[in-house]
Figure 1 (cartoon, rainbow, N blue to C red):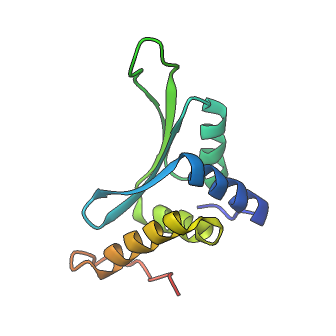
Figure 2: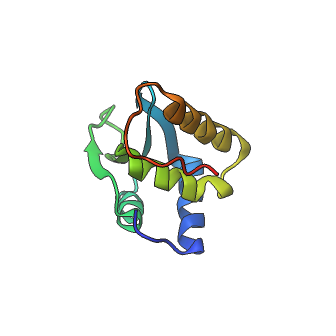
Length: 119
């Protein structure tokens, strides 16, 4: 992830608090997604972080507007984003980030070069 100013991190955190999702792609592999109909906002988040990909999603119903999704699955990038926005998140999202990080770092499957950045 590229270096962000405090204002940029706060903007991203607010966006992810309202529109984002912190989940696992598969067990012990955290990911971040954000989906909305405002393509410019999704692309701005992508450009700001410099990580992940933007996809146009299929219309769920004929009367729905097209939606755009930013998805970040590369572990180092996911961790960087989560650690950057964590101080700005509400209690529920903070707890989810902590849970995902704990699962990742405590996984017996994790043998990668990633340094535990939680402390």
